[in-house]
Image 1 (tube, rainbow, N blue to C red):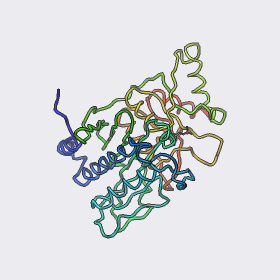
Image 2: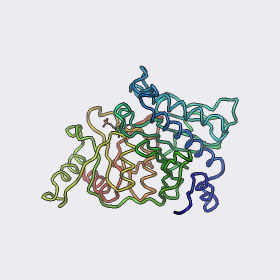
Image 3: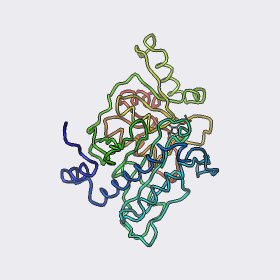
Image 4: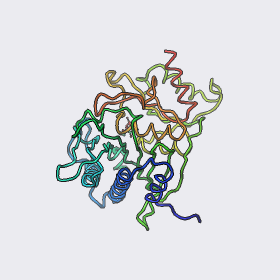
Length: 335
Ligand code: P6P
């Protein structure tokens, strides 16, 4: 049995090899991982912990907040605010940015997160997760404001998620490939269980919420229709479909065995670019997918090149196996 490589050892050895993880960033990632362990404990308690159901409030997105949404948000804030590695945080569950209180030292990093993605699955015991993205604060002046977060996804210095499923797994990139860690509950630490993860360039599996079909744009309708025609159709092969309604779980499956995940623009609310949020869902997931050899597009451009203008802005997401995403973006180009 090879020696167990802990998250800490992995980060130290990565820093030694290629300098991608300065000590402050390593501290940040270890603190986020510890927070995810606490969230995992709370999630695993379920009804026994009195954490199911709604909190009776709405978030900035106008969505009903689950008790665990708020618990996860608080765990991440409390874990990260005192360490001296952060200047500010932003969360799906908070309207504006959260400045590190003056009683703590300010750091150079900005942490963004969706504290509990897929929370509609909490009460039905289906996997959910935490998604996080790390940016550097522009160093041209003191203090920090929302405008400092308006950086394209190609400026991220770290990105990852923790999926609370049959295993609790942390998946991470700092720009040198994708590594996966499985929580060893006996040791209480994340142990390296996969690295240099690669997404197969071809797939026969797509993930999309089919109930929205009548609202999709033509290129998406064409792509899905051709998949549904199977081997008798233009694709010449049968396709399988998955939709967990938890982006973390759908993306995790794609990192493991390939596939294409789509939450495209649709005409239900034409002014909205999409359902998913750019800064703390699409950007971190897109970097992970690209670092594993996949492609992530909004149909017309690389997601990581989108210049954000609002903290909670939404985006159309098509990501996964390179040749399938290229096909979908090719259909958009023919519009
Ligand atoms: P729908 C969860 O609420 C989420 O933000 C993603 O995790 C997931 O992929 C999507 O929304 C599910 O949306 O419309 O199918 O419920």
